[in-house]
Image (cartoon, rainbow, N blue to C red; front, top):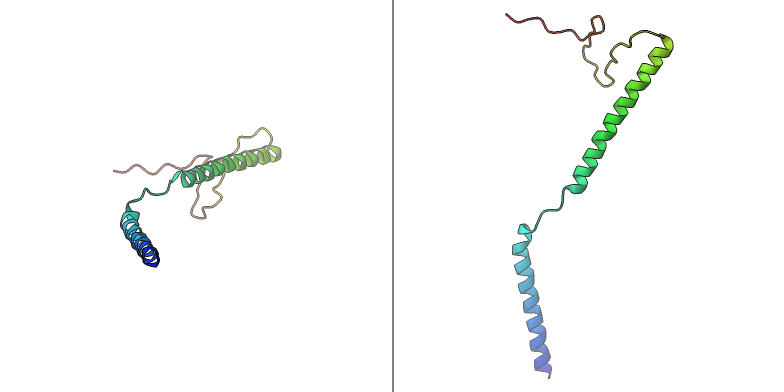
Length: 99
């Protein structure tokens, strides 16, 4: 009986090692995790920014109309761009024609 148990235990250890060895070889070929949650978060962040920009521009227009009733609202200056920003007569200047 003891030899039978030892043989069963040895078989168990051997098959356990075989399974581990087999899955270590197969593991790199498993399906990658889904990108759906990441894409969903990116889409939600993008549309949050779009809605935020629309609300900011609308508040800018309403504030301008309160201070200057009946006048045309000029183009809103960019919030997070500190480079050169020129406006001529309410329009963005066009580049000079190339020759």
